[in-house]
Length: 134
Image 1: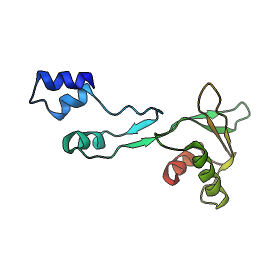
Image 2: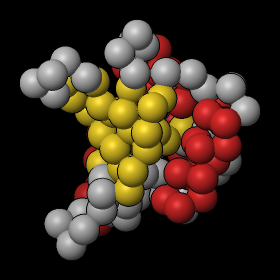
Image 3: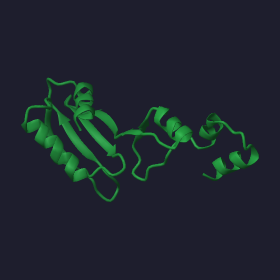
């Protein structure tokens, strides 16, 4: 923020591009990934805008060949317990297929949600369905 103030003080006619160079986007306390910059640009231009944020995930493969989706960061204001419960409901309602188990493996080292993917399912397809439905 201080860098953005310096840009504006040095050049009163600074453009949105100048401002975005100094302050590229919001810093959320829980991490996650900002998807696209158009919402940030719109917020800088008009004072209103929406920012799409996704969880940070990795797809791991075990030595036995099973794939696992590992969630290490959640978007700001997303309740971990409610998210896990929502995923369980979607699996029971057969709206999400390919998930065999979901566990909260968080500890003092940080957040971790492990989502086991079945043998016949593709982890990337399951992940895209998770993004779409949760």
